[in-house]
Amino acid sequence: MAQPALSQQIAELEEELGVSLLHRSARGVRPTAAGDALYREAVAILRQIEKLPEIVRFTGGEVAGSVSLGMSSTLASFLAGDFMKACKTALPMVNLSVVTEDSLSLKARIAARTLDLAILFEEAPTPGLIRQPLFRQRLYLVERKRSGRGGPKSISLAQAGARPLVLPSQPNAMRSLLDSHFAAAGIRPEVVAEANMLHGILSAVQSGVGATVIPMGDFTVATGSGSLAATPIEPAIHQTAQVVSSDGASLTRAGEAVRDLLGAFVRRFLDEKAPPGMAHIEA
Image (cartoon, rainbow, N blue to C red; front, side, top):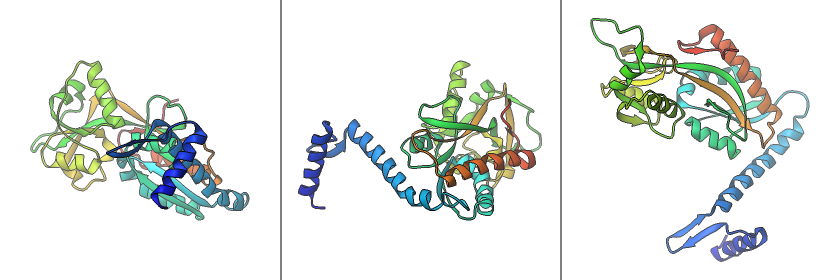
């Protein structure tokens, strides 16, 4: 579309809505708050329209359709492959797309309705999200093994904070949890490096940059994990994993089926082969 025609349509839309959608300046154009809101809602509407054929065609019989599921890199490292296999077996007509991002980004995408479901770490309810607790994970100090002698059975938060640490960069749900515990205890941790993905953090630890704090189950599948040791932090610190969806957009039958299968899959996973530190939610 030619720029004059596009500008005219935007101007007509702004007049119809009674708000400015764009900030215009010599440096370019950027959306206003109203423009951002319009974009998010328009994307959500378009995604719902795209799903209409699935909703109409598959109102009965076998569940079919496309479902997008978000996971953090730490969860995807040991859950994604097995769950995709389980979904293919149980729901062969469902096309599952797994997206890997941090919990805060996944939450934003659920709110913007560009994801159907996400497993994310969240301790307090977020308005606009429907949530179902899945499991909890305990945090461990992970560092290179010391030759010739075993490590302690546990470590205090103060002792962990005194070590050179490689931690997730903000914004990050686990980093926020850790920062809040350090602050409450009056501890200023020695953070020597940051990374936004699990493999980057573990690579730095294996290289001797420092230790890190992560759920123990997250590093056992990593290359070179045999050179690492995990020590539980006392008192225990836990993360709660939730499967969430938007309360402003109904899931399709395929989305509901994937959500239900995910709950059953996690319960079975916890009973059969949960890594240390990962457990059922206590009633």
